[in-house]
Image (tube, rainbow, N blue to C red):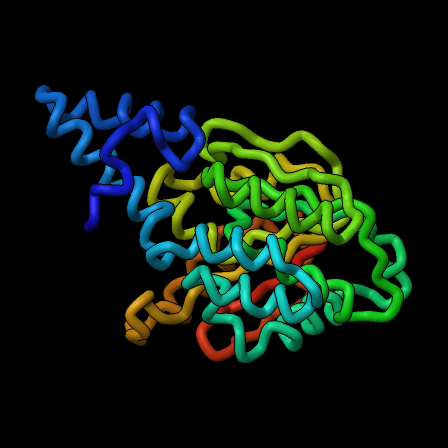
Length: 265
């Protein structure tokens, strides 16, 4: 771990409520302040820092400043996050699969998206709208603990003429209340479960939405295949309440397992 980027809690790049919750949780395990902070930093790195390359936020800001082609910009920005960067070789196919699993007659009704633990996913917006000619998104609600990620997302939405609907939120302690047509939970389930067992399913069951796309990594950040696909499939399919959700589609890409769900009304 590289703790330097979390050295001063007063200059955090994540929302304060998230850091304060981590600190409170570790306070129950350790007595010395330095041990509490060290443990909290470790948890913060697992949930946030491990997914971002050095100076990637600075690079993203620079790219946004000289934006000329939104789609080209999208591809460059997505590569600055390890999680979204892993999707680079199949990003168009990825969103085509998600929207292709939704009944054709319902596509036009999808006007609002909610992206939980969004990271740099909002920069894939051109691929979202390009997945089907009938897609016309009017609002993209993005939530993450990264303060600068939210700033970048809102800056990008402004360039696209969309409402600036990105907000900081600790999904362990809070839950968005907006009703939306489609929810994205890309690779966020394992992080949520690591923080609070059962939280991923709890969020799914309590959000107000019609469709959801949920994905899991099938390889480690180092690229190792340790049977993650089989384990996550058993976990998700075994825990998903079929009285509340209908499974519309399932597909495995190079390093990502994706499910498309419809919430039963």
